[in-house]
Structure formats: structure tokens, C-alpha cells
Length: 263
Image 1 (cartoon, rainbow, N blue to C red):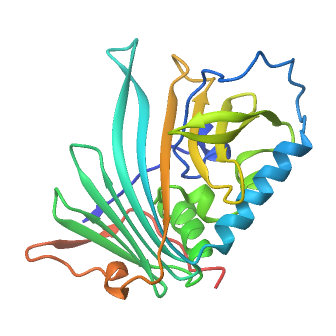
Image 2: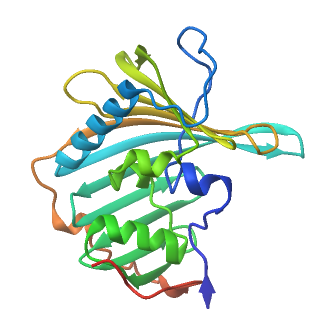
């Protein structure tokens, strides 16, 4: 039996989110001047690079997220679907992600060159070999297996290339956008089909606290918002990243697979 888990639409989301599910478009600052295609505000670029450096330096950490993803209901009405994720990372090596959307619970394990995806509600799981380097494994799983890991764009630590093409504008809006009591830099990445807003903590820990993605070409301009809380750890028990099938769970195959590359 073959079953596609965590299928990812590869259209408008592909460029501005390879997994990064995030959004909100009510500007918290003054009106923005006209944006030119390909515009690059140096301050925005500097903040994104600082965020990348901060994430790269973090070795062991947990990210708790709340996500709200719009969907079209009954052909016209936009509704918001909430979900929560916990992503635990040992930098460069291992990852465990648990996502609960109220109807299903799914888990992703990356460890020692192996990927496992577990569907708790249906009690089945699938395994595949992937590159051992975590960044390469995450991208391999997305490109070859349609497995989208929560926050993948942040975890691969290459924000400009992940979020913006040459024609997308990268605009700095303000450094006083309050997210859960923390002042944040507010950055807009605007393209023809997708707009992404990032709220990155001000100060010496430039961590992303909120993201909002708007799909301008889709019916109703649906959005996806993610709120993030980050916590560094001294160490993580290796068992967190090791999948042990529960009694009665069935192993199945992924619908698609490719040859492992990038080790």
C-alpha cells in the first residue's frame, strides 16, 4: 500500500514557503510608500542575516508554534484552521516535529540518515533514507517525498534565498511591532503572487516571533499565520528523535521517493 503523507501543494507556496507556514497582513506601522519590484532595503537584509546567524548558532532547542491557516469554505467564505506544533532540534543531526490540528496528530522524525512519518490517528508510519545532514535531509524530504517539516525555511537557515526571488521586494517597515510584549522588526517580502511578513525580535536575540503569508493569487487572498516561542536546551535525550512503532501500527510506503543526495 502506498500513501502520500503531509502532501504539499507545489504552486504558489513553493517559492515563498518550502514548508514555512506563516501569516498576517494588517500593517502595524504607518502607510508604506510604493514598493518597487526587486527593492532591497539594506536594514531588512541585515536583520534577516542576523536572524540566520542566531538560528545557526543555536545547537539544541524547542520551538512551540500556533498556526492559523485560511481555507475556502462553501466556495466563498474564508475560515481559519488552527494547529499547534512542537519542533525539537539537535542542530545538524536530528529533529522531531509533532503537529496537532484538532483532528489528527502527525509526527516527523529525522535521525542518523533516517526519516519516519507517523500518523497517530490511522496508526501507520512510513520510513525512508535521507541525507544525514539535517538541512539536506529536510530539503530531500520536501523535494522527493512531499514531506513538509514545520518551519523548514527557518531550519535551513538561508532566509533570503528561501523567501525572496530576484523580483520580490524586501522592505523594512518598523522596529516597534509588539508581538506578545516583545518589540520586533517588521519585514515585508512582497512578490507577484505571495506576500510574507516576518516579525523578528529586536535586540541581541533576533529570533522570528511571528510570520504572516498572504496568497494574493488565490481566491479570497487566504493567509497563514504562525506564532513562535523559542527555548534553548542544554541537551536533549536521544530517545526524543527515535521512533518506536506502537503496538498495532502498520508500516506503509511513501507515494514517491528519490535517490539520497547531498550527504
